[in-house]
Length: 411
Image (cartoon, rainbow, N blue to C red; front, side):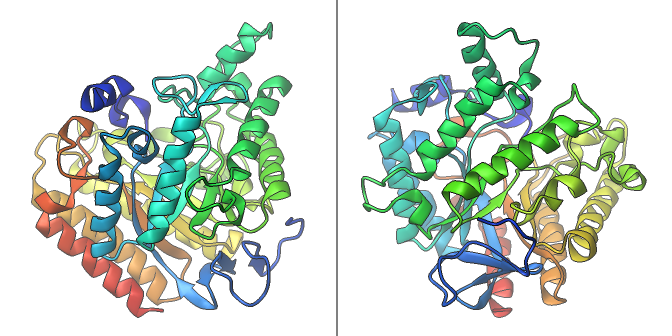
């Protein structure tokens, strides 16, 4: 999610707490052919132990941080328990916090063991409640460090850098990132004793939350970075799936597709060429019409029409061009929007869910979605406008549970 709308600073938290080298039919997330608990892809579908697997889940970026503080650890358990109750099976979380309050990574290669143990707890607790995890490895934005922090670290060590996007090209920074990837993937969980790279609780790795390289609209820098880092991840861990973290903006490889981009966005990403990289196992899009197409410039009806076109265009591309599954990695409706009411949020969730179910039922590529974001009771100060608290929103919870049942019926 974009930084200025949806991330809550750690000041609030402190107050609360006082090898895959060929494009194959099956993209690797396995150690053997018999089905061992690792999710795989088969064409445009996800498969778990030989059966179709569909995602109905949520984002909860805060889990590692809350698990690291004894006074808030219970919130992690609460959220997994509630999510499981309504049939959700995947959560997307941060596996980074770079040099900020309660950092995971204090400086390049230096880690806060207490925070790492918090992430260990999250992985173990997710497994207990039958929830798979997508772990994002760095942020495009400044929240929780992100690429800006990596650039700062490199400057402190004498690198002559111009801007944040040097993250994607500077060889020293790329080594910092590769070392972080290795530290996370090879981490031995202190709760379970299982290395992350060997733990089927983890659904997938995500290279970056919403990567953008605005200084290079051609997309060449980001394409090269994705190719290099995807190969690096797979060289360490060929059990798990890998995705990029893209929002879905089209680029120069398909100029005819750029018409689908909101407000003619060109941010250095290229949905087609980025996802064609062989080590990338599935594609993602995010859906935020109210951020990309503000209602001051476009009616709510037109925004919803954009949502339908956005999902359909990417689903068709995954069906026929990429031949990989598609996940709607983030979507939501903020109560801070003018004219918001709960019925509008429920209708919006239902619209997204209908698109997913229709695709899944017909054998299409769109295999699931993760709303932004799930909180537990007593976390009001973590709210960003998009939060869902299941105990306080029974009508929304019912829609989520219905989607879980419908997708489960397809397996």
